[in-house]
Length: 494
Length: 86
Image 1 (cartoon, helix red, strand yellow):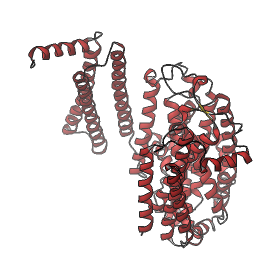
Image 2: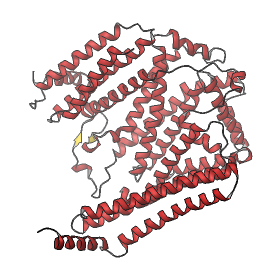
Image 3: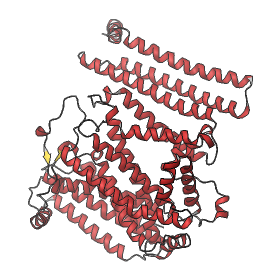
Image 4: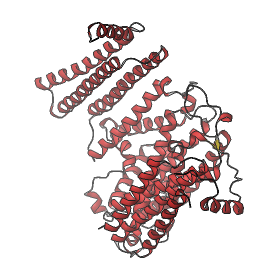
């Protein structure tokens, strides 16, 4: 393919628009070349999802009536009588899911590469608030179709308000359900969903964009700091804009295809009688908190404790830039925060999946401790092993060259074996604990638990031995490999 | 026309055909919803490919062959599935 000059038809077309609209003299600063990477634009894709939500939502607003008597019929009308109505609702729902998922990925990417370090602390704080607003969109929008699923699940969510401190509970009640009753509740949720939350999100987005323009896109995480002055800069128009449109087009086509393959079907209308036969379950993005609230220790009087714990978690996340004060942004140099982040993601996945599988079931506290503790332990152990390997690799590289393949393979197999042993131990221990919790203690179950715990113990001892063998004296692995190579040289074919 | 312009012309043509096809669909039929989504996706994916070629030209680089190949296969699958969509 021949390289062409910047003078073809397409380029002239873009230039025509530029000459008339002045797009190449934007206020936005150019982007560094390293940022032409989808991971740098997860936030922008979240905004794209928000815009699609806006467009599809405004079209649905033309037909939707926010009253208990008319909400479901008007939703059904959109489904059956409006041109591409079901398609609109499907796209609206799936882009809402994508928006939440993208916002989460954007946050976790920021967490792992610690973009929140000086001077971007407030960008992180604003971004976290935007994340809560995004969850608010999910919570308020879920009620609007007035189906038995949406209304029942929302009522469970609203019921949590009673566990808040009195002053806060009355304020939140006033904010989201007013004087009470279905009509007020639906109208408040509708107002919050279509007016208040979009307005708040736009204000926060403006603030974040302003800070982004002030500080620029964060540097990549490298040992040698990247100097922006030495980086190739790419103008916003047309290059970065075209790149963003490219990403947005791919994202849009994926959303369209998912909507085509899995079209939405409308659940039955809410009636108190039907709701009584139904086990309420929230949408997937709230399943993790739903599962926490089902743990037996948090039932009834324990509910405020659960809410306090979740609130503390949110506060810690918001204030993270002021907690993680270390200078380094390298993942390899931040084992504590990276491991905590991995545990956080792992626990969210486990809780959500578990919540999906056990609708309405109260979870015994012992079982919860075993599952959540086991998950944390497994992730921490894996992370620890990976960090040790990474440190060894760095050390090996620093001391002239990489370890020979045989040594590395041995170490890898050793750790994979330990991990498998540990996972087996945790899995069988959980089984035994659940069996004991459900059916009581007997000799066979005690032996089974003892055996499972001994597997975990063996895994821990084996990993400690491996680490000792690798690190007890500097270069012991290299010396052993060297001896092995000498042996091969002596005995092998000449 | 150079090779890039030929590809872009083909993609524009494909977009035009897909758009015309969109207007022929019955907008109240659930079958049409699927076809509508697929052909709109054809439009968007074609746009993404055009944008990619344009960017690479500006940066005096060759368009990524894997990306063009994946895009072309994706478009072919989309058009076929759009035509065969039940």
